[in-house]
Image 1 (cartoon, rainbow, N blue to C red):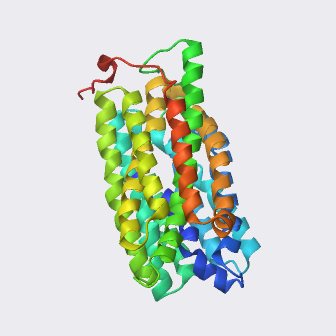
Image 2: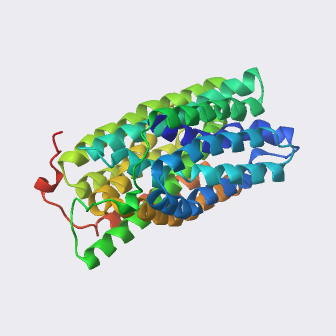
Length: 385
């Protein structure tokens, strides 16, 4: 399951990591002009979550995960075979549809029997962000040694192999999740639950926008601001992978904390800390940018487990995939605009204004999170297996 999360995020970012080279191959004037063609992948990544979540609850999560591994692998092979920008847009959209399966299906499967779901989500988030790091590093080296098509094809075969492996080692489900007995960890009134779902959806959207802007744009930002210092794309990719790998450890720490303490104050502190480091990154150059991006990604990655922890705590497992699918469809569809706007926004405004805007978005997120109900410490004590 953790490998699957890593592959999910890696496949979604291969295009962003190699867009400069692909743009040249397809006769585009610049990477900014090609970047909007990747929006379909992120739109389907969100919209596909609704049917994926429904099928996960009613048909079975194990079956859907097999579809995920094999489907995302074959769609990546199609991307590797494309010959034009519009062909790539279509193939990436198909890849996004299969990528949409993981979060509403995989995460509920991961935590459905976990005594400490926060820690499980934290480790799983670490694996996902290592996939982000791998996309930056592996794509850079495969492009340098073989070409951009190999950057899609090599992980595709790995994913298909994982699908076969998963089908052999994951126990067969005796009944679909919707037919089991269940219940939420913390029971709220309908009005309070509705407020939690609104907070969860809005913060998921703002968090996804920040995540998509940074993970899709950091590579090009480093190439621009390291010009004359480091120009080798493989070295820059390795530096970016180092940022992602180290910053990902924040999710494990956050996972431990939310198993023991209320979610609200932890998340408020994390989002508040995003603001100064985003403003610093807006103006930094060279190695100062490297340091600033470390801070940015630590606090953006640290905020990722929040929504999944809220779902586990307040939503019955029998409908968890459907609830996750609906919130993902809304938040990811909104945040897919970030991918579409990234190239034009950078072209017209520059990375500095973009990062200042994300600082304002973080401030708005703080206001929304303040609406989350408080919790007792007792409700957050870890369960001993």
